[in-house]
Length: 437
Image (tube, rainbow, N blue to C red; front, side):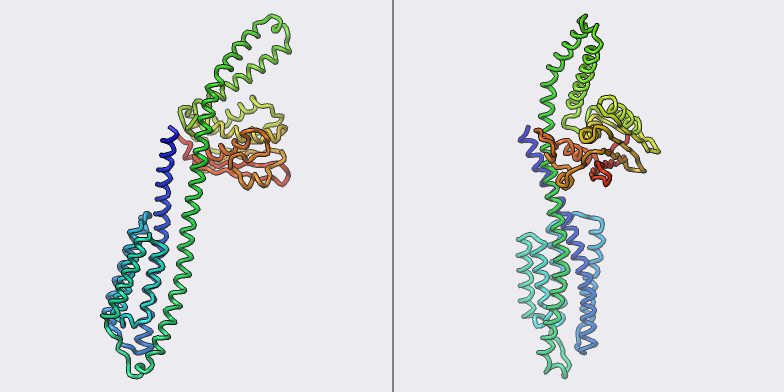
């Protein structure tokens, strides 16, 4: 079973990694679309400068057709990738091939390899090295090299006015400088944005791997807890029988103090049975067989009342500020999650504890406040990580770890902070859509 679960986790990780890869590819495709619009305006400005400023004859109509093709392709790309968010390597590869083809056509019409803007091929090669898989990058290198070689043999020569023929070296030099500035500016601008996309993808993958490890840890702890619950059933049943026998002893019946202690022992034993039953009902599932229909106010009011009756707390303040009651599905895990935070706060502040609940249109907010010493900075920094605790007990620090993971499974968030007047506050926000019937 463990090996099968690990295989499923590996398959899930690979699927999520592919999703993140496609998401990063979508962002990179949008960057290429933006780059293409810059290329459109750059070509228009360059053609206008060459024709008007330097009086160099160019095949304007043919170049305009190529430019129109580039605009049409970019509009189609924008419409396609505005809705579709999964972009693969092949689709990025095709987009770069189109860019290489457009650049080759414009260079063919404007001097071929003698045009200093032929160095823009380097931009395509560098972008492919960043965006594409290795095989795709080498294909782009081969294609650009073949195009450049072909342009050195076949192209329409530039027709220069007589006054510019002697100044051809200076024109070529100026073109090289302009091309270098364009290449450098575009590379810095877009590679920075593309690198941010890749770093965001890597951060998402790292976060998902961390969550996978934590959830695997939860599964293992759930199996241990379930096994321990089964093992505890027999000794608790034995103790229940013994306490029942003690209650029938005449000497104990005549001693009020011992009867009071016996009643307290039975009450605590019943509480242990309830805890064990909840573990067995909800082991492995955040919303399992123990789910029941209720309303959010009824559920929270009953939880607060039970907490007040089963814990030794001098002053427990419960405030329900919910304006609208809604039907929800509650189960033992949800109840245990809230009680876990309350128990931790009670341990830090046995004299005073507060639970405040409120809601808006789509979120339920719970605030647990205590007057204890507060959280250490190291615990706040790593809040929700396992074994982050000042208690010197085996297994301490798992309570908040479980709370954070249960809340996260329900789509909520948990935040903690120390109060300026002393004590600590834990804030839990849950989407009502995860609880409503």
